[in-house]
Length: 298
Image 1 (tube, rainbow, N blue to C red):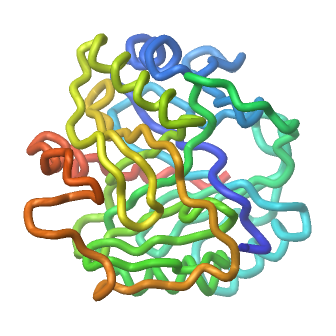
Image 2: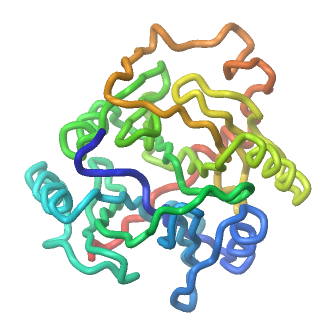
């Protein structure tokens, strides 16, 4: 378990058509819209009252990744670690704009804007069927895997729990992974954002809802290797690559790392079951096309 970071707080994205995109995430993707400033949209899952998704007007892009930090002491330690690593970081932790805790902004080794917040004020929440709980992981393409691996382990305190030929899986809590980083060098773009449903039936019903609303399954339904989670991938509004997932493997410190030589599927398969076709050309395309916008450090 990472002593500093407990999981993902918020994915902040840009959208060209904000009203249409906001309607999708509220009415189709089952998120709850939160009060907020005019001109942007905040959405919560069932895990608490903090935003797990923020949509800002502008070009379609990934803007910011925000992590939940375990407490104020961990936040101070993280700030010092990032500064010692020579990475850009806010001068000091500050009260966050939404009034829910203290945090700071920084940049990772490839220039993505990454924020950290302690104290989201979210009470424990009951499971609600057919409602998204949280963003369970980010998947990022990168140009220098070893640099990102070192940053995640040595600076942010994550553990590498599995590596395949194409991806590394990074753990911070009981979910198998909260971050996936591509090992095949490419531009540092978004691969996808994964949202969690509370159970398999809820996830399957969401797949049906998506199809009824004109969003075809681009890869899935299947079961991954690392993480053992069931998945379905979609091109969301403005072709944002999103995953609906359930049954993420729960682990502790006794979980044994497995490397690329231990992960693989028989020829013709792209998941454990062998039921799904390979990822569609569309999902492969959009999993490389969304850049990260460089934002000012506040």
